Length: 349
Image 1 (tube, rainbow, N blue to C red):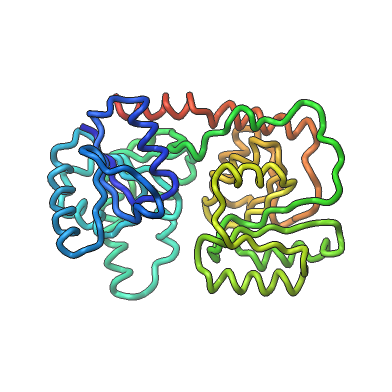
Image 2: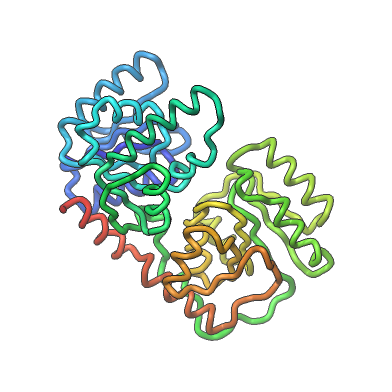
């Protein structure tokens, strides 16, 4: 039996469906925490969601410990839940069969540790667990290097794009002929209302172009809403109606259409983040700016993808040839077939 453990997020319901369609459903069990209302997943004999009540958590954690021992493999979908980390620390003999799917934010918690006793205890537990985990799963080798550097991780690395959100639909590859000229440029700024997007710093770099025919779209529906208000106030002050805050969640199909309307995306994250968006945009032939000192810059550049450094933001677009090359590189690597093959290698090894 293969046990999947994680917190519900937008990646999880499509992943459960994919596993049940492509692999033997009876061989997989899923144990999650989180909001079923926000991230709908159908509970069944194989899918369990632990709710927040005290008694429910006690029963859920007891069930998880039993499944830890019954499982042949444990797939950890991120390491965000400190209760799960604690249970793993109390059962260190199960760690060699654990496969940690590194999301990014879970790894980079290392850089956010405060000086409080609670924070230090969490990091001690995380270090104990990560150091002993048997397998590290990600397609970004730089994140594996950081896990080894920061936490002394010794697990084997398995290359995997992990989720359908990282799969580029073949229909997204742009046509060979250049798109007809259109008025103005649509610019995407960041991916959420998380301070790690460094919105204001990026807006400052875009200020020289405030009189150009541009629209700056900032997705702010997800994350710190107090921070989102600060970004909106600054964006409106500098760019007026050319700054368009996006404060409502958008259905995925509608969001894809929105991404297709963009010309430029600027991601000023100081860590591996927004990779789903980045991959989709590159697969559509869009021009992407990001920091050159992050692990995913090295990964994407290594594939041959043309990127631009966020420290030198301009309104320069990819050439038609560069657009085509980026799109085909991304489409070749981030495919459904690749994902299924990589998951199969992990599940069946």
